[in-house]
Structure formats: structure tokens, C-alpha cells
Image 1: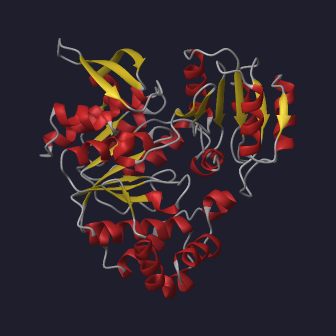
Image 2: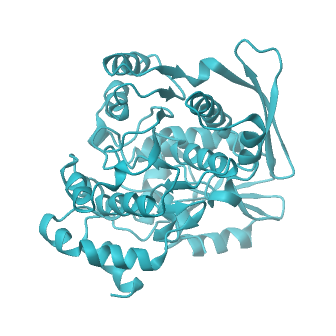
Length: 428
């Protein structure tokens, strides 16, 4: 098989969550363990950081990878899903996995695929671990796909575990309360391994305290160690002033990720760096500052309040659940524009009506869909939005919706594309 044929095999042969949803989720680690055993357990050949959370885990993963790269460490980065190219999921020092490796890996493991019928995600996790081992990375930043306890990535023994936050998402698989969701995500906490909690809630903190106690894992609460006391935008950077516990001097950080929700992720990253430093990783203040200023450049992160056009400004954001949309609306409220245009598409297994209810009524709406089976048809989305007084027309794809918005918008307007990772990924 050549590379396109290999991708076609992986995408069509294996159950894929982005395509079919919960039916692709394997609620055990059996296949991943079997795959990695076939590969001589590559996950044991490199050090790692394990990151889960409802929102922010992608940004935190990329920030930490950028900092570790800046420090001179050969750094693996595994994230999901991809926006444009499958190889975005697996990177070393910001460079995507080679096509030849994807071809050879798939060919080598194909007999086992036919035998045990793993999911797409299980195969990509095994591929990432095998690649990182063969690339001899110093450390790999591993983002959980879904949940934590039963996620395919949860066979690593990391240097540090991180839980960014807990919110309402994937309740059909993770549970119908914040406590249950937190318990699933706390499943990445390992015996004796430090864990950083980014944001905490009264409902979830006892879960994390109990899990860390049961595993003798030192628990660190990022939001108690530092506070973001001020922020502003300047020249496509976010400047954040941070006050640290027991220190009188404040520090200013420059981020090339400009969404104000990154202030929360920054606090998580800073505490993670502090913990890693205490474990012997050489991450001084200058390295942290330099790494945070070039996250997009070094790691290729996209889709987080990302501007792709000016006059009018067009923003991409992968917000796709309640907390993500809420943060996005907060961002819009502090952004200058004349009129607001929102291009939105969603998938069926989200709290669609609740998410729509959070959106501003005065915007011009363009309802559309990503080209995956899980996507809500654009006309159905219109019907769900109508009782909530969100007015707009439907479009068959995101690019025709964007073309219409660009024709309608004045130069001082803001066009926002959101609601689904897969929708953002289809923007040309």
C-alpha cells in the first residue's frame, strides 16, 4: 500500500470515533496492551507526561511540548483529533511523523489488526508509542483521547499527570455527573506520580484528593499556586501578568495563543513546569518564557482563537462543548467588532440546545455541518436554533458559509467559525 491507500485502510477499516461516535470507543485497554506487546512495549522506552481534561488539554499539551523543545529536549507530542492531516497527531519536535513510517507500521501490524479488530484510536496510540521509541525521544507529551481511566493512552507510566479541568462532555460514556466524569479522568493518576490539577470545582476536588491519596500521588492545585491578575492583547500576543504564592514579584508572560481562556491553561502549565523542574528537568524561567511565545511556531497548534483573515477578521475556534462555548462567548464579549457573524456546526452527541442557548442573539448565523456521519444536518440545526432566537440561513458546508459571510460582512465585522473540531478542520 502507498500512503493514500494506507490512510484509506486506517480510516475505512477501523471504527473511528469522529465518524461514528460512541460505537468506536473501546471501554478497556485490552487491544492497546496487545498491540503494544506485539511492538515490544514501546511505551516503556521513553519518559512521558500524561494530560487529560474536558477542555484545555490540547493547548496545555502543545505549550509544554514547546517549552520542552525550547529547553533542548527531543520531544514527542501525541494529540487528537487532527484538523487537516492525520500526521498532525504524532510529532517529534514539531515535525509530523513520516509517511513511510505510517505505511510500514500499518503493513507490519495489519495481521494483528485483522485478528483483534482494534479501533482507529487504539492503532494511532500504538503507532505513536512505537514512533517515539524509535525516534529515541527524551520525553513525550501524551494527550488523552477521551476520559482517562480506560483511554488507550493509559498504559504509560508518566513523570507527571495533569488534569486540566472537568466539565460536561461525553456524558454517555463518562457519566452523568461531574463527580463521575472526574473519577474517570482521575484514572490517569498513577502510584507515586505527581499530579497537577488545573481548575477545580467543589464537586470534583474531593474526587481528586481521594484518588491521589489512594495512589500516594503528590497533589498540586495550579489555581492555588498562581493567579492571572491581568491580561491584554498587543501585536498578536496575549500578555498575562501572573502572581505566585509567597512571592511579591509578578511575572509577565507573552503567549502566541491569544484566547483569554489560555490564562487558565497558562497557570496549569506553569505549575507543571515547576513540578518537572523539581524532578530534574531543566526548565528555567527564560526557557518557559521563550517556549510560550512560540507555541504555534514550534508545535503547529491551530484552531484556538486563530485569526486567518483580516478586514473582516475571521476567527477559528474548536470550542465544541458547554464549557468551551461559554469561554468562547466570554472572549467575544471583550473583542472589538461592528457586527458579529457566527458560522456554526455541531455533532449529534453534544448538548446542542444548551450550547446554542449560550450564544449571543444579535449575531448573524450561518448554520452548516462537517462532512462526517455524526454531524447534525444544517437544516436540523436551524430548527434547534429558531426557538432560541438565533436567526440565520443554512449552508451545505463550512466554506460556502464562509464565502457568504465574507460577502455580507463589513471590514470591521467579526466572523467566528466554531462548534466542532471537524468543522474547523474543513475550512480551506
